[in-house]
Image (cartoon, rainbow, N blue to C red; front, side):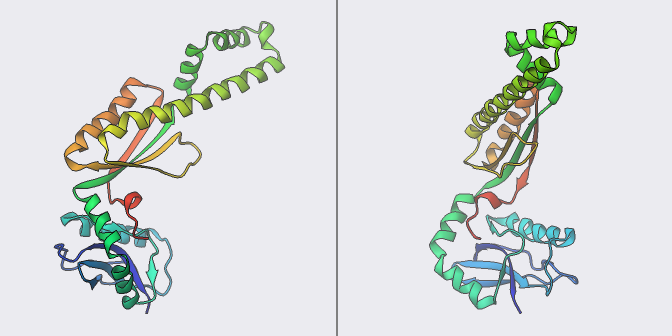
Length: 240
């Protein structure tokens, strides 16, 4: 039977006696050891799909294992042919994994996503550009700027101004939060977010980091900032 892999940790780490993994019924989690490292694994279900139950089970194993020390979490769906293959990988990449575990000691991941509050950002771009603001007033009054062509041109100008503001605000967020983090990773771009950033934060700087996130919204009302964490350090683990 194939082996499902959740995370990698030091063999000396104090782990929970029992953990329930993916599958229905839940597969018991065991360890595969190789020298100073171990992998938390279970039998892989015959049909593994990203169902909510299994996604949560994977996350729960990683979080519980990481309560007593750093772990390198694998993303959902990591399957190896068997335990011997897992042990061989641990042996081959021993130095790399140990170095990565050391870098994660005493740190957690926080994900920050940001978007614009549409009415507020429109007000901000108009306030920053007198010519654009005048064109806006002309459109509203139905004067020369109120023609269809003028409104179309105005909409294009506003869209460009908002896009430039998105770039500027993404840089602003990164600059404001980076001083409180040990490392940064850029997440995949997706519609609706002007920034998707993951920060590795030392636990004794956690409150400073969260205060800096809060200050971003307080000082820039057109920004909507969402922070999620603490999380296992998926973005900073090279175990995949």
